[in-house]
Image (tube, rainbow, N blue to C red; front, top):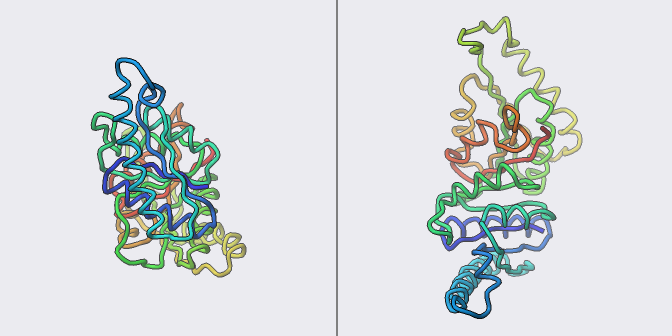
Amino acid sequence: MIVVGVDGSRAGLEAVGWAAAEAALRGVPLRVVHAIYRWAVETGQGRYAGVARWMREGAETVLAAGVDRARREQPGLTVEAKILPGDPRGALIREAEHAELLVVGNHGLSAVRGLLVGSVAYGVAGHAPCDVVVVRETPAASAGEIVVGVDDSSRTARVLEFAFAEADLRGADLRVVHVWNRYAVVGGFQVGAGDFFEDEKSEARQLEETLVRWSERYPSVSVIEEIVQGHPVDALREAARGADLLVVGSRGRGELAALVLGSVSHAMLHHAPGPLAVIRTPA
């Protein structure tokens, strides 16, 4: 099952459209959800019963628009709707417990006092128990290409697994982008590449070795390897321009590494030119 959160915004409906197409490709049902205050869900009578009923009716209207969008674009898809009680972030995270994928929109307004969906997207992408796709807008036409950003850490395997499977599912090419810097700043000093980094030929060789087993597992996926010097955010934003999907890992930094997004995935929530998949990686 794929879960998609809606909030009445254009971005939310774009997320539904993307999620419906993905669910159809995977052959799984789609659940369209919307969160409102818990008391509004649970209050049936008393002083605030009218307000609670009004909020539930509003939620049902938002859900109906989402369900209509999904069924209109994917007529054969099994679609259901559900009102979630509580804060959108926590409610979506709980609902995604048994989902294959959680999809949310970005840069709209939620029903909870103008809470930016950007903050909801950030919250669920860093904490959801499954992979998360954040949709700001979808390409007008499929480019037939998925872009994945990788580094040289052990966490790359989980990111590549998702990217290869997605490319295979869509019959798309896969552009694998590895960004590195010839110089690193450590303790306030700029350190030469010879101390901390291989040369570009070595970077390319390591990337190729990493991709071998994935190419053997997904032989129909055409792979484009790209080694880029520079800042990861700039490089990935440029590489993903026009792509169907950008895939990054959710690696965090510091003591809360398992709970928060890494700096690159955080930045891409704001700068990705299209749909962004944030993949859960080991701490």
